[in-house]
Length: 166
Image: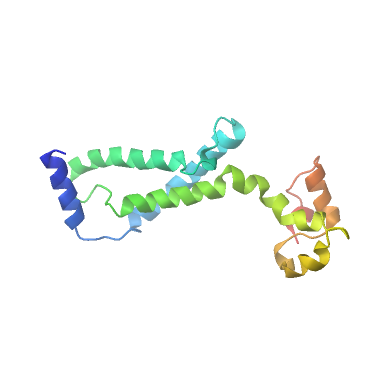
């Protein structure tokens, strides 16, 4: 480690804490979340080239962290208040990682079938009507089998009033 690296690390550790959720973190998150969701959708659903959200560490969030670290080297030249702090960097990483999880492969692909599975497969043999269904809040799920069946069978769209309203 060179003297300049040690000096910058020491100054970063002793700088006054601005907190993790600064205004610029929030503004950058507002920009990054939709871009990240687009990127996840593009690579996981459209191109099916990679599954960023099926690994233990989301490579898109790590890539963002590396890009921010590179950007920090440029921002240091502008002045001491420009670079992201050691508190802001993990905050942006966590925000992007959580947003990736919500936009990712395993979340949206199975969400609707998981929510409606209990009602579609509730038969006298499973006994779910008496064991599970009473514990599900009726205002949170669609329970009408005539509405749920086309979702499982296919040849329909999710975007109809029957599918969107409980």
